[in-house]
Image (cartoon, rainbow, N blue to C red; front, side, top):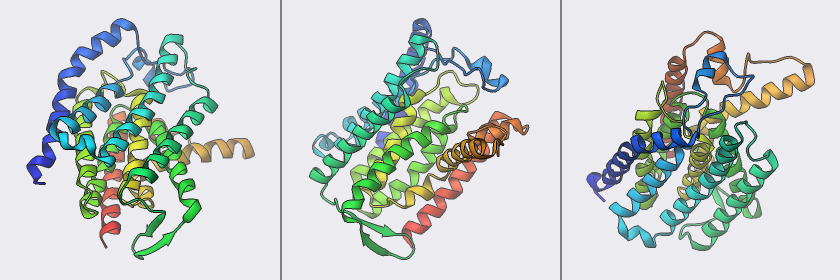
Length: 324
């Protein structure tokens, strides 16, 4: 597998998104599939109301098509097939949530229980397929730096379940500013390409590269000022994909490091809610934490750039921890 072959899928995925998106955006406008901003949200975000959402559909399909078109031999590859199915399953959950929101013109999509139940089901399906079909499947995890392996046994499916439900929701929380979730996830995908090549699971690297290409294309339309949002369709799918890549490359614990930005976004919400319930006081001016920085006077692009940088540093640290 040469560098050219590896990057071919990236280029095809990017072109597919760049070509498709200008045709999709007017259709979404016509259907009135626009973002519904929360009443309690920032005043600066009110202008985003009506911006087309569900853009995740385009980059999900573009990435999957690019993988199979540029590497047709992967139609018989367990890693790619399970990865693609997982990408689609979580994307479908998000799509259903987005669809209910836009047709109701409120922020009432799937109830938290319904959404979590569907995410849980998808996580279980992933685990069963991985257990049955992946050639390198094991319940052993590696402790970074210590290079110590621990067999979790029956606790491993619990870990995988938590990885999927937590990471998909974490990226969903991160998707609050133009270009934030797409860029942060794109950066987080890069270390898993290296891990995949180290583990000699090249199809996993190809899949991740194709997703990066699709996200590069998407950012042309999603960076500030965004012409389209990815919606829950895109954010849930991206979070689940990160979890799947961590399982595929046997770097489950490094998902915490590589995905530090979505983790911090999630922790900020947990801290905020807990503090308010117990102390009737807020720790942040607004949660998730990217809104806190906005309320501190940072521009949207400044927050996004800072989070990109934080994600980049976390990715480098993750790579070093995985290599050493």
